[in-house]
Length: 461
Image: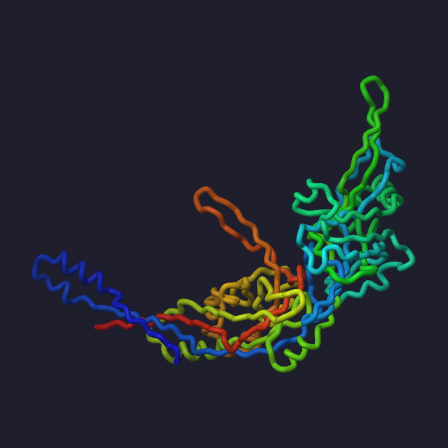
C-alpha cells in the first residue's frame, strides 16, 4: 500500500497568536478547540489496456499530406488529397475581360523541413477536377473513385522538398512553394461565372454547388517522401487596362489569390497504411501500441470505481478531494526513420471519441484530456482529473461508459493573448487527429502512476 498521510495542526498558529495577546486570566484561550487535517496521497491503483484498430480518422485540418513512404519497423504509408476551395467574395473586373486572363496556378506552401524521407527524391502528382460534392463527414479511408474523371486530368508536375538551386532569398524564407500550372480555360471559366452571377461567390456552399466542386491531388509516381503542405490556394494572373490622363490605355499585369483552402470547407487526406509485421506482432503479443496517422489507438479502463471506494473507506466526516493525476510512460519503438511517440495525446471516453472530433470539441477535463509528451521523463502527464472524479463521486451506477478511455494522437492549436494587467494567456483553439507525420508509441501501463490526494479534517473537542 502506497498511501501516505500527512498530519497538520490547522489552528496551531492561531492558538499561539491568542496566547501572545492574552495579558489577563481570561478563560477564552482555554476554551479554543484545535482542528487537525490529514492529507492522504493514494497511489495504489493499477491500469490495464489493449490496442484497438483505428483504420480511419476525421482529420478536420488544413494540413495536407502528400506522398508515399516505406519505413522498416513502421510500414508503408501513402496519402493524397481531396479538397474544396473557399472563393473570394469579389473578383477584379475593372478593365478586365475574359481574354485578359493569362494563367492560373495552384500554390502549395511547404515550410522548410516539413517532410519525412529523402528531400531530393522526385515525386509526381496528377490533379483532377472533382465532379461530385464531397461527403460530410469525411474520413481518411475515403476512396475518391467516382468523384472525378480519370480521363480529364487538369495538370501534372514533379516536385521535391529540397531548396537546392533556389535563390538565397528563397532559401531564407520560412517556406517554399510547390506551384502547378492549371489550364487557362479554368481561370476564364471562373471569371465568366462571376460576371454571370456574383452571388455564387458569396458563400462556399453556392460556389461548390454551382461553380467548382474542388480538386483531387493524386500521387502519380515516386516513393520515399511524405510532404506536409500547410497552405493551398489558386492564384490568377491577368492584365488590367487602365485609362491614363491623356486618354490612352495602359496595360498593367497583376495577380490575385482568389481561392483558398480554409476551415469552412472540406479538405481530406486519403491515407493508406500497411503496418510492418513487427508492429502487428507486438500488438498480438499484448503490447499497448499507438500508431498514427491511422493504425492503432489504445483502449483502457481507468480505475475510478476503485478510487471512489478507497476514498469512501478512508474519508472522515469532513473530507475534501484535492487532486487526481495520471502519468503514463511511453517508449519509442525502433524503426528506419526514428518515428517516435506522438507529440500530444488525447485521452477521451471511448463513447465520446467520435462526437469529440465530429463537433470540433475542446478538452473539458471531465470526458476528455490532452497531455504533451515529456521527452525528459518519457511520459504523458494528465494533471487535471479532479473534475472528472467529482462528476462521478455521487453517482450510484458507474458503468463502463464512465471509465473506458481511448488514447489517440492529436494536434493541439493554441492562441496566446497578452493583457497589460494579467500578462499572457494561452487558449486551446482546436484539437484534431495527428496527421502531420507518422508516430509510433509504446504505452507502459505497468509503470503508469495514478496519484489521488484528499484531505480529512478531524475536530478535537
